[in-house]
Structures are given as structure tokens and as C-alpha cells.
Picture 1: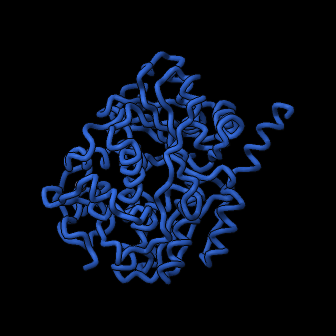
Picture 2: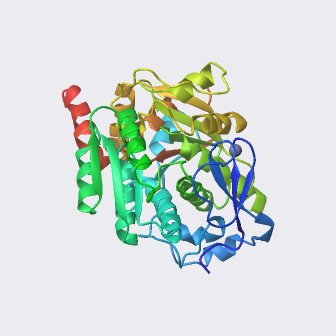
Picture 3: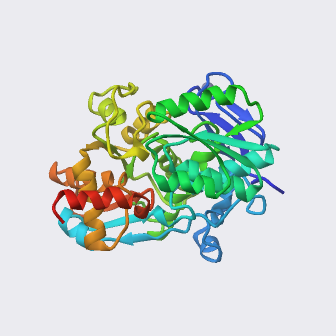
Length: 397
Ligand SMILES: [Zn+2]
């Protein structure tokens, strides 16, 4: 059997329409909204002891909460990343515990490996010959890797500012790549034009089908399992498209429904001050974000001026009682390099926003002394070695 028997299809996050069947693709046929994978959770019997007995550390150990069976999965053993305690930061922030969920340790060094594993599995099952996406870099590299694994062709559209590592590794995985002059909106527009001419291209971009964000969900399930099924108080997620926050809320709800871990953590979006449409909408109390006019941040991976999951992320942070913080680039780079220098951890430059946000929340008095705080490192610091090193040089180090 290739699918999870509890997987029923999809539900629209905007109009609540349901789409039945195990071959759902694309966006909502009624309203164009983002689709979420849906499950008959009453039919799922999952106990901590069952999970503890499983030897695989890949994200497919949680196959009851994924659409497909582990046997059908296109996987390079993504997931199983550590939740690393950082007691020195906990002391500085005045909270009980701080952990970094280190997603840089995934196969291509990004949390996106989880999503691409599920998305490329779906594409392969659908009989696709090609997968395609526009990317700021990391999910493009990841898609090229998983397409290679599945024997599919991949087409990645990246802005010229994407890092050398991302571009080089798309090539190394044998992917077809278009480097588009400008920023992510230019790459997205070139991608849309190309997709219109290629019916055979199966989209694997975040939120374009129910699958990429479904994979991101397992990062939160691992956090809960690592905390012995205690729900952390707050989770800060570096945020571009908003898919991660939406996925984490979905994961927490499903764990709650299954009785594995109760409630949801307070979820926080950490964005770059030079491109912070979600933070701006949150601070202004608006229900929907407005696209950011002139994005300008060193954090290329999360520089998304018109985020597809922006309103879902807003919902997630409001519903959970969390918040949103815009971090100036120097504080972001300081956040990433300080954890490298004091805790030995390698955070991507963009994930430095989560560290900067934690300091900002502490300064505002929004953290409690008994808090367990989780910061998500979405990608490997070594992919941003030049940016991080330059920050030190700017300080004369
Ligand atoms: Zn809809």
C-alpha cells in the first residue's frame, strides 16, 4: 500500500472545502486557497511506546501523520535532527531552557528536505516526469536532490542573489536551473511563465500543493518527542513564506488530537527588518498581510515580499498567542555568529533572526522565567560562510 490508510485527501485552509482522494494536487479547486493534507485521526492509534520502539530516525517514523507509506517514500533519511540545549543562552535570556532545533543537519542542509521528500513522493506517485519550483535557494537545491533520487527531472528558478552553494548543488544533482536577474519575485514570474508552457511540470514549491508543508510538520513532531511529549512554551521560526509556522501549528493540533502532546506552543515569526510583511500586518492588527515594496536584507533565504503563507502564518501566531519580530540585519548576523562562537552551533544567516527575536522578546519582558523556548535553525550555517565571516570582519575581527 502506497498511502497512509488514514489519509483522506485535503481540506482548504481558506474556504474549508474538502477534496477527497489520495491523489490531490495543486490548490483549492473552489477558491485557489492553500490545501492541507487531511486525515481520519480517529483511525490513528499512535502511542509514545510505539514510536520509541522504532529504529528509523527519518521523518517517516511518523508515517501515521504523513500521506504516504514509508515504502513509497522518496527519502534520503531526512529528519531525525537534534534538539540541542543551549544553557548559556537560556541564562542570558532569563528562561528555564533554550533549545535549537538544528535543521541544518538534514541531507542538503535545510528543513526543506522534509517537505521535498513528501512533495517529490507525491509527484512520483502522480506519474510526473518533471518537478519545478521558484526558490530563494535552499528548497531548489533540495528539490534537485529528491528529484535525482526519484529519477525525475527538476527545473529550479532562482534569483541571481541565491548563494553559490545552492546554485552549484542544483547543478551537481543534475537539475536544470534558470538564474533570473533580480530578486525572488523575478524568479517567481519567470517560473510562472515557464510552467504555463510545460503541462508536464509538477510544482513542488512550498504551499503550491498540500505536500511540501506537510513534510515540514515532522520537525515539530520531533521537537515534542524530544521533550518527552511536553509542549514547549514558545517556538521562534525564521519566516519567509510562512509555511513553517502553519505546518508547526498543524502538527501541534494533530498531536493534541491524538493525545500525544497537549495544546500548541506560542508561535513566533522572526523576519528580517528589510522584508517583514507578516510582522507589519501583525503589529498593525491587520487580518491580511500586504506585499513588501522594496525588500532589502542580507537574509536572502527569507526575503519573500509576497509570502504565499503570510496569512496562514498570521493565523498561527495569533491563534497560539505568539507574536512576530522584525530583526535588523546586524542583530541577525550577530545572533548567528554569537551562537557559533559560544555554543558551537552553525546557524544559517537567516536563522539568526530567531536568535535576534529571542533577545528582543526578552528585552520587552515577553518571556517568563519558567519558559522552554525553541529556536528553529532552518539551514546549515556553512552555506552562508561568506556572509557570517563578513559580519565578523565588519567588527574588525
Ligand atoms: Zn478553498
